[in-house]
Image 1 (cartoon, rainbow, N blue to C red):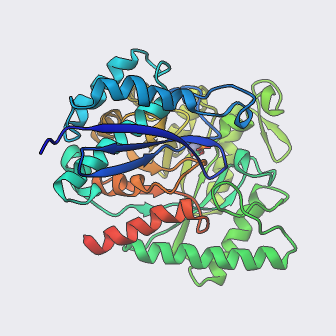
Image 2 (cartoon, protein in one colour):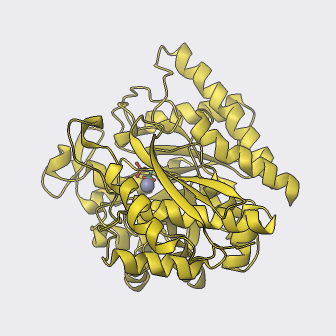
Amino acid sequence: MSQTIETVFAREILDSRGNPTVEVEMSDGKNTVLAKVPSGASTGIHEALELRDGDKSRFLGKGVLKAVANVNEKISEAICGKFEPQNQQELDDFLLALDGTENKSTLGANAILGVSLAAARLAAMQQGIPLWKHLNNLFGGETSLPRPMMNVLNGGKHADSGLAIQEFMIVPKFEEFSANLRAGAETFHHLKKILAKRGESVGVGDEGGFAPRLPGITDAFEVISEAIDAAGYSGKIEFAIDAAASEFFGEKNGAEPGKYLVDGKNLSSAELTDFYGELLEKYPIVSIEDSHAEDDFDGFAGMQEKFGDKIQLVGDDLFVTNKKRLALGIDKKLANAILIKVNQIGTLSETFETMKLAKSENFGTVISHRSGETSDDFIADLAVGTDAGQIKTGSLSRSERIEKYNQLLRIEEQL
Ligand code: PGA
Ligand code: ZN
């Protein structure tokens, strides 16, 4: 019985926003697996290229038939019968060479990632072991259940709430994953009641959090604090935010040139840092992601200098899961943690390299979904297998978010 990849086939499916994305089906003749590729909205400019057709007559230009064809023709022909899924590094290196560009623009990071993730899943199945176990065998080190950061209030590009900050996350501090998830869900339901009572909208944004049109950022913290109290979790739940500040920076986002538009005010980079400082005095915020725009290195360095020894400062658009960007950030002291999104870089092996660098520098690691997701729960196993410590995969609603949390409940039983 051959253990090599026998067939690889891609198709165009839809993501949680109704936009096309890539699904890869891979088989060794006996076992067959699927991998689905997520897609961001507030994407970093330094991310690997997500190949879209640009043909306005299909899906408003967002079709992925070119990426699909790249899997079904170029990649399939090059790897089938030649590679064993157990040899992840060898396969990923080959895919990089086949693409031949720095940002994966020949084949598309969406095409490459689907194949890379499917191979890991097929390898786990061949061995009859859980995916998290196989990922841990590849990555090395410990395994652990991550602490969830749950995005209960959506702003920025993920909702029309009008709030500059993209994600208001609650982070319970119980030992067990299931206890943290329960605290998140109960708080979420209390938040819904409180918002409804105030006559606010209780419709949800892209990541399943509420998206009320609140007057400003402190109102968002106040209403979530009220929900935490009502749920009986005062002092047991902390806050994290993803500002995704590239999305409220500069003229293209309606701000003055070089300024950040927050609650109707234009702030300089340093003033924005002071604004975070005021929030930190008022609320138990333990983590701030992308506090400044992706190339505002002075802004990030200022944050790290002022708050880096007190809280976690995470680079997402700043580092784009890219080892070179992370090395730059380490050198310039721009943050103390990194967000990990597999589709920002495009292969599992490169994701591992970036995470290894982060860990060797004592950087925190947060495994993350994208705002455009699918039912694929790969990242749950990834968080466990790499001992990442933290995961953010949305709110306590919408199956494409909950599926990852539910997979972590299953893994909790296994561990
Ligand atoms: P995105 O948002 O998937 O739209 O980029 C998630 C994030 O910014 O963390
Ligand atoms: Zn982010």
